[in-house]
Amino acid sequence: MSEAMNASMGTPPRLAVDGLLDDPQTRIIVCCGAGGVGKTTTAAALGVRAAERGRKAVVLTIDPARRLAQSMGIDSLDNTPRKVSGVSGDGGELHAMMLDMKRTFDEIVEGHSDPERAQAILANPFYQSLSAGFAGTQEYMAMEKLGQLRSRDDWDLIIVDTPPSRSALDFLDAPGRLGSFLDGKFIRVLMAPAKVGGRAGMKFLNVGMSMMTGTLSKLMGASLLKDVQTFVAAMDTMFGGFRTRADATFQLLQAPGTAFLVVAAPEADALREAAYFVERLAAERMPLAGLVLNRVHVSGADQLSAERALAAAENLEDGGIVDQEPGNAGLRDSDSDADVDEITAGLLRLHAERMQVIAREQRTRDRFTSLHPEVAVAEVAALPGDVHDLAGLRAIGERLSAGAPAGA
Image (tube, rainbow, N blue to C red; front, top):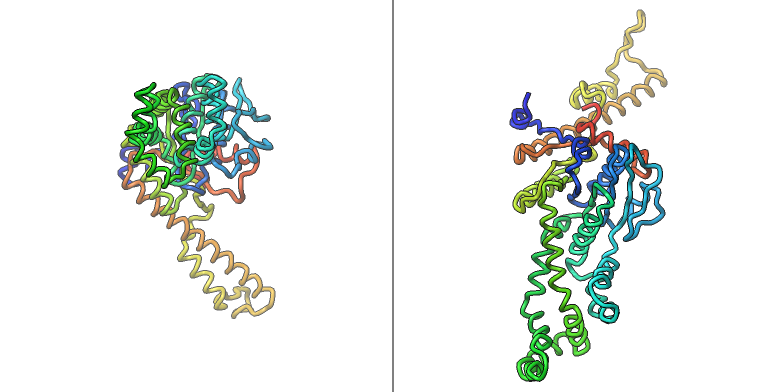
């Protein structure tokens, strides 16, 4: 049966994860999705599986929870890729790192200005605030770091674990947002005196900006305004480079060698977010590889429906099981029989609850599939516990490769 026919019947095409990892044309994989759906674990598992299949991979995480370091046995991750021991195969190897937003910004300043100007920028109070937590800085620095990793060509596969919630796609807006900021009237006014230069510049500053400066001083404070003006003057020669590199990375994300994986859980809210990501990626012409559906519940006894299990449990609890031994017809009333019946009824109710969860997840997934029948899906069965080591990441990788949960 063709994948198109499967999709039309409610069965989405299967996401071929191993084919994606093995393809030498795949150079960047971006995992995006809502918070708490397993993006970090998925990114790490993809990295482990890719390395053990012969790729030289690096995983860049922007998740502040640091679960990636714990899973990979690394005491701490920082802005420098670190090799993960115990992961290799046929020439492959794995490195991992966590984005340090401020350090990445500092590296850009140090690398694109002379030492004296770099020191002035790094010591500027406004720069320190901007680099430590200005809205959108993290996403822009993630694009900068991705561009740096790609330009080094030390790895043939880069896997990016994005921030949680809808901000995971904010890095797509970073070039436009940065351009709007740098081209905005406020920045142009602050840069104008330096661009005019000499006495004309001083005249412009004294006459043309006197009223605005007075107003801004009241709003921002004279000290902050001076810090901003000093920062803008020092950064003037770097603004074009920021925009150029951001635009280049944006184009890199649209290139055929990039693949986006939307990660979700089989829950209504998470799949609504997944639908948003799918539609946004399509609007930006970003190459979507498919959907990873994590923590899917399964049962090895799915022949027994929830309704039949509940009916059997109620029968046991009502004492409806009859002893069939010859000469012993009637209800079982021994303490041991009652204990067995109680335990059995409890297990039947647990099974009924599991089957109801499975049915609810299936309905939720089917709603997503009906809206996006073209999106390939890999379902990953829920594990009994958290993933905290390489063995767990390998187990996730095997489930990703299978594309459907065991027992489904």
